[in-house]
Image (cartoon, rainbow, N blue to C red; front, side):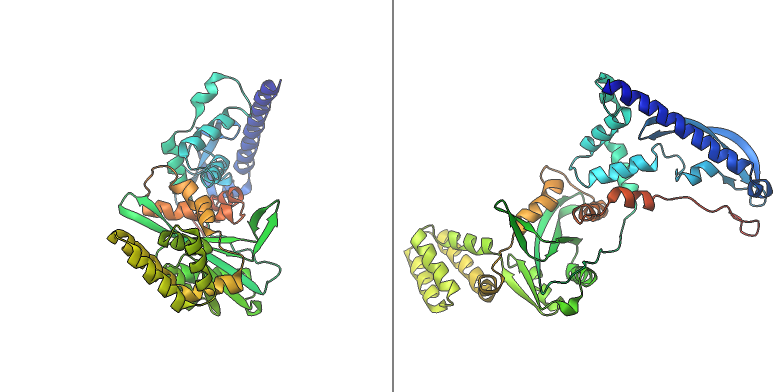
Length: 395
């Protein structure tokens, strides 16, 4: 029953669409503007793929009386670009799905089967998958969308910004470092699960991420009302540099990386507790004595180098550790965030990306994560309708 209804509704939708297209063309054909400005050139057939299936329709091609340029009213009115096989709605679905799924093959299969029928058991549905190359071409040709940042209704006194990077394989050579920063107001806990409060994500390729983050922060909130800004991260130089761009901010080291460094220094639980106690209570001399003792106990040079390296890491971030444990408290879930935001899409399976394409993919991914309606934005960006000009303004 469901299968039959799905097939029937598609047929009704296609019939209605054809009637509307015929009406639009007839309306323009008989208008005073058309009679004054355009000749009838020919009636031409075109086939497009819509969300209801394949549609073949006829429409008139017009020729401007003065410029002699052709004009296809129906195609312009409906936003159908010349030679495109898919209508804007299908392309919007493709762009939306690609920002969620990590496979263009999956996107082509899902959308292709939905176009064939909302629900069908017909084996032929599997033959209607849209090819990976077609999905790629549509995604690549889609316009970069930069909507306005949605301003928050209230500005909290404290803002947190956590940051990290992910390396993604590049088709041009070395891996591309993608930097990501997440602006949020804190953590909420429900059923023992933590959730970021009003997160806003910025992904960036290149050195200037903090200018973009600061700009987004100013658009999201009234910065004059913010009393404290904490930048959280793993101690990378580029993350620390954020305090030089974002006014009145402090850097705090991620708890995970402190504990990881201590684990690399020693596996003994008592030693780890002692080291942690000395760090938190700012007993640097006692901390150094323990490190020196541990160094003397090692026979392998590799272990000595590991202890030395991790100890330096802790001392470089000594003040940042105190900020985290004495001011921030809530921790930094950036490792899980970047895994979900970037790794799950771009590096969970072996892939290499063209850098220009990667910037667009990241932009769409950010829009999805920040709660924008990509389908609607894509439709608006695809609007190719043009006005019918007067004689004094030729096409």
